[in-house]
Length: 280
Image (cartoon, rainbow, N blue to C red):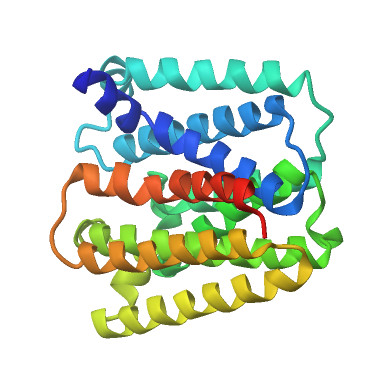
């Protein structure tokens, strides 16, 4: 059972579930039912994207640079990627998707990959690596808001716009927590992030500023259809994220980040779902 649990975490199955959960939460907050095939498409897309990223990263920062060795040592990851692609295709055939949001996600994912690609002529991009935090948070926001709602970014209504900003700020908080953890490794690899670009004090202020923005946007969503129960649940997950940030200031292990921090996304969706039973 323990091996299965770590397999789910290490091959990004859990984080793919978190992406689907946030997408489901988007539907709950906007009052729009989400197609199960669409949630599955988001799950398989996230699953394939994360496994592809880790596979490319493993090759880029490997000392051997042997493609044959990479394939032989990453058979499970390759199988998961193929499974994810098949799952995406099967779900896609059941859907009529807007290509605008999907195109944005693909472009953002390519830009996110650029700093880790093993090409010398792309080294200059690493100097702008501090933008990767914003890029990742923005990508997650598009995936979990615009794709489940199937609306182009230029046609968002006021509630969707506020939810988009709110989700972006939430993802920024989580990304900063991970950036702090990866700061030492990023410096060795010549990569930049918010945690390598800013000193610890400035990073604390940035986190606090984003957290306050998260609460403010959450408050304004009340005027566009978000009930008090949803407001409370979203505020609570924000406060829990703040507490988790303080815990992350000390050295923490694998489960803390890949189950605890990532799990905040899943927990946020669960709280919103539970708040649906206490609407007032």
